[in-house]
Length: 196
Image (cartoon, rainbow, N blue to C red; front, top):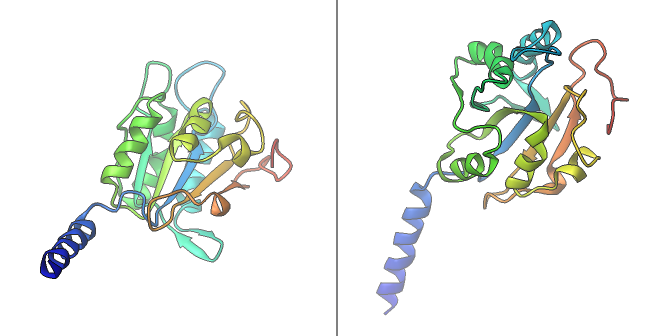
């Protein structure tokens, strides 16, 4: 009986250690795509400046005594209305020599989080998404988006927030260690923006 229990525990530990880490001890960084024109599916000039600035900002990001460099870049799938999330990550993708993954449409946040829980191997990943679904994305990770950003909805004119989600060794969101950061990358980005 003891040998059976010991063998079962050993087999379970081997399975757990060989399983994909998913969200265990992971930091997820979320940005809204960079600035957009009044009409069109691409970034405007200021959006291109922000995208270029991200190449420096995230290589590496120094936060709370940690040095974080994204090991995966994820954007919403391109659509007829927008390619901005992917465009936002292009300069960083070139700098880090990482592909931009686009596994899900904008509204498919639950599918994205499910894929990450099952198959993620990166310790730090950066997601660029559309502002109207970021609170839903945070909720899919187990968080409270309105509480984290300090208001019910992400403001339509805010492009300079970074959401930091931290996960424990069980892959559970640590809300007390998750936060909204004011980027302050470009002129006009300042700590007094809505909800900061």
